[in-house]
Length: 204
Image (tube, rainbow, N blue to C red; front, side, top):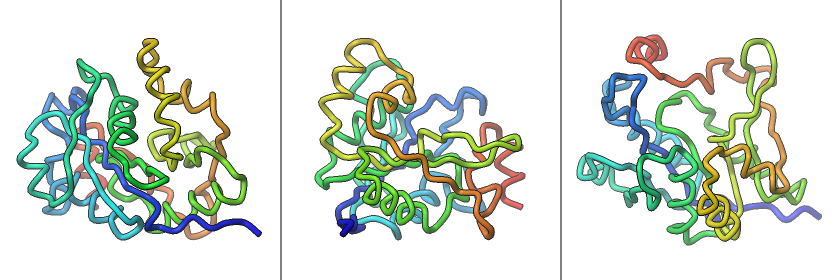
């Protein structure tokens, strides 16, 4: 019998540590989405699906702390990308599993974690990763991941060796891709807002 992963065994991590360079350098997580800061919207949407929550951010920390979850900056220098946020999350995570979601994809599914957890348990995988429609084909979305917290040592080795590409690291581990293209799945669920115009389009 497959051992189910209980939501209480999962900590959710909102990745809000980027430079926002494609948005003119603004702090993307603090831009409004339907009247609520993007990162807060993401946090509230993820919080319903997991036991614990935290945020990875590298500036405006007081603003992020006001959302009510612990906020942790990158431990790697120079805005090293989402993998730096994942590393920080694994270092701080006190549950057996960590789930990562970027702050700029506000429509991700409300059953995201349940489906990732079911697949991870079924396949006895170390990582469950979203695979979503993009340009007519299914593509892996490596920032939407559920991973075992005991992968920390592996990620420390990878990043200290200069590795920065998230898929180059996940490919070293038993990963199950979880498709989100069923009837009823929102085709825009994994659209991310890189510009303010894209953010306004998603608000519609």
